[in-house]
Image (tube, rainbow, N blue to C red):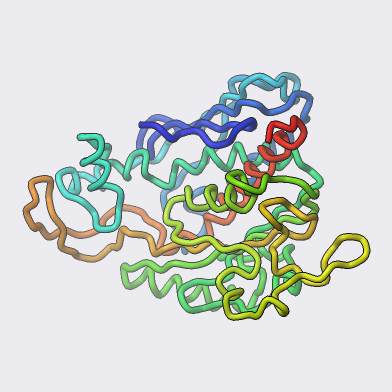
Length: 354
């Protein structure tokens, strides 16, 4: 299986399966001399870990990271950083009923057809549990770029949408509720809605918005290495993501060019920021902001019809511990992938590689 590495200079390779002994990764290209805050790294993992509230999967995992290399006396050495997060609360028997059949809208069928074999326990490598390694790497990338502030938050669950500009939101309230929506009133509505969906044995999708402030001018190249293109790739690599838009996004098609253009101030900043902080594929110093759409979790705790490995129609029912809505736990993942892109492109800009 290829495709387990992300990045050009700041490279992250992840390994492990949902129900294996551990997940982990290797970070290659991290500069030396960065003093790491291990509590901050663990705090990022705690934001992603299961069992943190009643509206997420109740799998209980401490998600404690153990580092093996690349760090000495609390600082990065410039050599590969190896780490692992051990699984402690697998319930593989919850998946025995799908050993010979495929869950609709899951990777089960295509994995079996492509590789001729699959780990049916929690989806194996296709499980969103793989993202735990990305969060560790992203937490280190954040500490490599302390001047850049990255904040992601839930802006929509189902049809419940936060119709406010990010500039009018208090990001300090993102962690004040289990949904991770910075608007308390909307957060309460979203939470109750997710609980109702969970009670039905069903799932619902949502949108995560992300803002990166203090990004310097000059990250990205104007052809195949556009900054927004790499951000799009990063977000679309996250499990369950179905869409990515930055700046004015799809709303921009309704506007005339005269209204959509971002007029300049004398210092090079712009009066508006419909470009989303990127022009011609290069960061322009304004806030980078984008939206990431997540589909409903495919495993529903209801009866459904599917096919087995021989193509026979069979009836089964979803079992196990699953998120009724993935977006609350995906917030730190979106931030992590953003940080990985910005760290990689910062190194590329410094070395004039692209």
